Length: 290
Length: 259
Image (cartoon, rainbow over all chains, first blue to last red):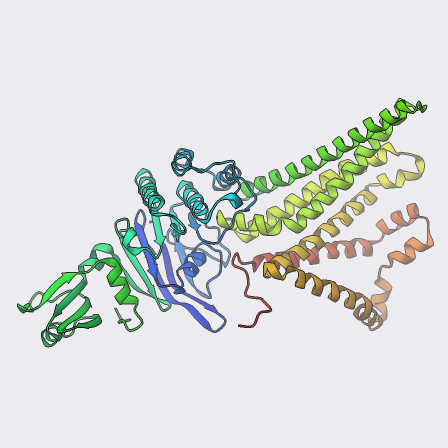
């Protein structure tokens, strides 16, 4: 199986623990959303998987084989990140040519289509591009390489709404033409909610959610009504947060609602979207034992 | 993966070397045309054969020196960009370093050997015959490798640390070298046991006492000279390899700033 499996990955910088006992499996041909607040370790995790930095401990397995040693070859994975690893003084067409050389294959058709659609001039140097266009160029490379797992770390950095929409379309197009695992790490949760199939949420060094989007949405509820009624109904349920708006008491739940429990008339139960769930899950006062 | 990375590095380095050679040749040709023009204008007697010979010498020597300088500069400047582009494309650190060594050393050897042999051949006379002795040729190449290895060691060491810190590291490196050579090396030599001193290899004494031709041949016949040379090449390469193994694409948190 072309699964990418992380087992007990830990990363420490000095005494500071960034990632603690991360266990994850990225399944083939699935679009993942890797979500987490600033500084939670998303980029560190992606950098470890793609061999840019080393884990303090733990194992990474690909196709049921542990990638041995600290320095493993990882051409099956490609990380597009905010950090620029290209020579800024090189022209775009030269970077494309060299990427194709090192990767062995390159989707030239998609590359040309994206360059035209976004108005990127291949003769320009990377240093001549704005932040947004650099992001587009790097995302374009990531979608055109033959990697089986593509990590897009902040792929919409500096992009305006139009370009973001175009990029999402190209991500879907690339996926439809050649299914692969795509991991999107971004803060714009609302926008990617329609793209992703599986959600991974990192919070305070650990993975707190690793479930299909459908399951996450199915378990995310906002229950409102008089305080005593809400509290009575939500007993033993996993409450992420509560709010008091005048006489209205609101509880955010991340759990399966008990089918046998009768729903009082004065209670309103509704699903909340991914962004709301994420905010409540990762709020400092939120429940960490999901 | 190895082949692709090697091809990428070789293409980049050889294109730079060839562009430099082209620049040198063009400069020589332009200078020659100007010189001929001036000679004709001033009605100076000159021999066309001598002019052509002089142009050929200038091209060979200029090409040899320029190509070696370019390769030496590449040893300093090619660590980070190639390393980072390799990592971006899933190339391991070992592969990246191995291809860097093959690229630099093979290019240096080929360009040096061609330039060196051409230069000796063009100036050939009996007194220079020792320069074509295989042992001497190999030793001269190894001296070039020694310089290249040192360049790789310095550049890898500096790249390992924060980019903004390179000048601090460089100053520390120079200060350390001076302190070591001026103060520590004499102390270490003085406390060496007698048998170690007997094995030591003193180039200054050898070159000071005899003619250069004889001394070069003499040096190339000493096993200690070869051992010293090979160790001097290997040690910097090992240090460079260790530096590159620990090189992170995110800069190491080594700064002088206090949080």
